[in-house]
Length: 310
Image 1 (spheres, rainbow, N blue to C red):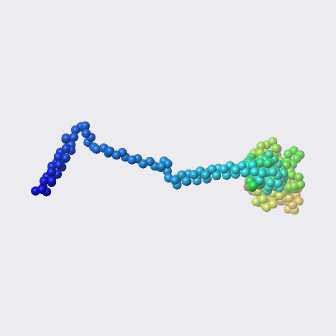
Image 2: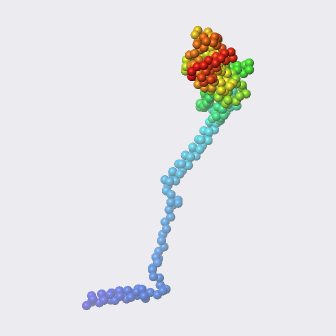
Image 3: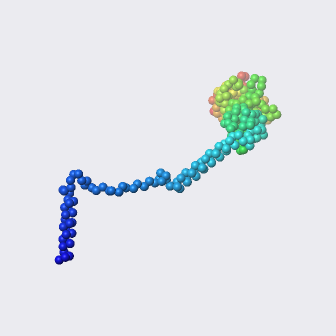
């Protein structure tokens, strides 16, 4: 009986405690939830949350960047102002591809670049100046470090002599007039009918016709272009040429032939195949007109047309 009584008291105490915490017995003044009595501890990360390896990397990159900037600064100063990079003498300019153009004529274009670093020389501007020399067709300028320049040029190729009044100059296939260099021996036909007052584009257009004519007659008989001593390009619709070496023995005097403005191959073939017969029928031949489609006129100022089948 002594052991049972404490158990009953404990049960009564638990019932009383449960009755004390019934929700309906809790007044509005009491909180429904119990608050923590101990404040929550907030842990702060050191140095903004970054780790020491991160800051080591930042430091290394900063030092490396500063070193590169410093090296670049002194490198640029060396490249632009160091005596080892300066263009001092004309011998530091190599010129290749020149035969007519004097080496000194090209070197003097760089006189304003003396005592200047080769990296500061405007290559494109110098190239344009070199190409203004009449005999220069193409040019290139390169830097050869530390202190040299290389100039490569392609000279123009004359196509004929150009008669300008009583003087003879040279002219290339693009209509560019060239002075005759001293000490050079050229063998070209003479082109007439043009003046230096014509635009270069117009001279080039007529020289293209001349080039086509010379090429086509060589297709008929190799070496025929060497028989041309003069070509009159004054009339765009009629190329008139003075030819030598015709006849069976090749001793016939020079003849003037009007070829018109096209079909030079067919017309020249007609001339080669029929010249001996025309000479036998008409006597000495000094002029032939091949401009007409179905007839050939031999000695046009003294004789009648000679009909032929086309």
